[in-house]
Amino acid sequence: MKIRVDESKCQGHSRCYIIAPELFEVDDYGYSHSRFGTDIPTDLEEKARLACENCPEFAIEIAD
Image (cartoon, rainbow, N blue to C red; front, side, top):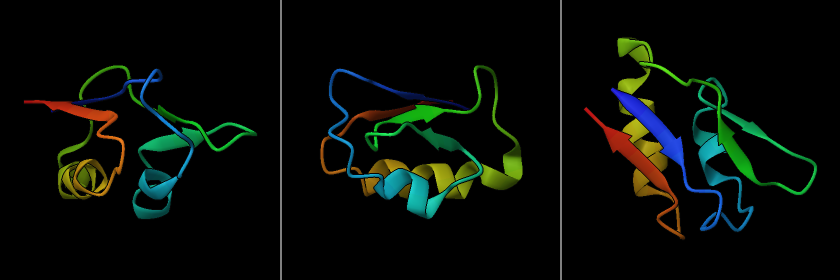
């Protein structure tokens, strides 16, 4: 599974970071970026789905 943040959609709510700080980095303005450019660990897949579902801007994309 891969996860990506569409930076043009992210509004800096930081919900993804609150749910899964292992998966996301947040800049000084609250905008998120994925920590992983490749496959994420399988033990973090559920957190990735939760973060995706909780993004109010639908800025997080998951590819299996």
